[in-house]
Image (cartoon, rainbow, N blue to C red):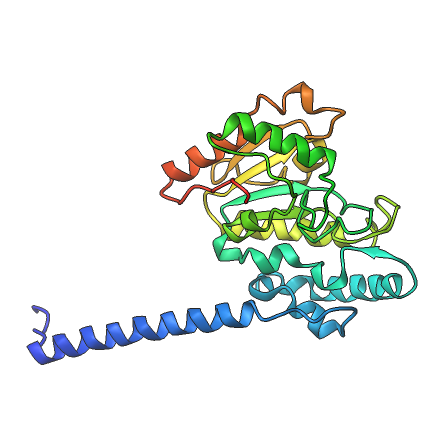
Length: 271
């Protein structure tokens, strides 16, 4: 039996409904964006506010809520009696600046910087107000200056512009006590960030992973290499950068892959 013909007025009605639906979806997207980018309260906040700092990641990381409660109880006490970094409201900065559905690139770091006015919740990045650029970031800039045409080495180390374009700057551990590297590595962060990478691996497609050094490579060892693009080299630290980092051309390779897969390349320049 042939399908029932659709009347012309029904056709236009369905098109109008589809158009209305599209507008509604766009409005919903805009509403989500507005909700995502509302200011994060400063200082130590109740757990619900802390957890809400994950913004668009919250649903995908729902199975980490209990773990995050344990982490929260630990770091809340640490931040109350000790100097810790980054500022409490910046702990989930990477998640706030790079929604899960906007990720193009993942860079895996280790511990936050342990000195004052350096850690800002984005691996390798320091606030624009910090006049001293850390050695590893200097070497990242050195590679960029030879790998990306027109890149000028900036006078600051703020990588927020990258994060806003879809470069997820993830540290393995998200907090640290001042002057004490790895001081918070056993509080649950490693389990949490393992799950973050697993979520990206499963829910996203065609992501470029820039893995510098063995810890980063081990962290992402479960990433599907058929589904994502993995680039590996030594860490940009002055201790190892001369052993292959400066000739890796990771940034141009990253952009070539993005273009080949129909995505907008990253503008690596920093004003």
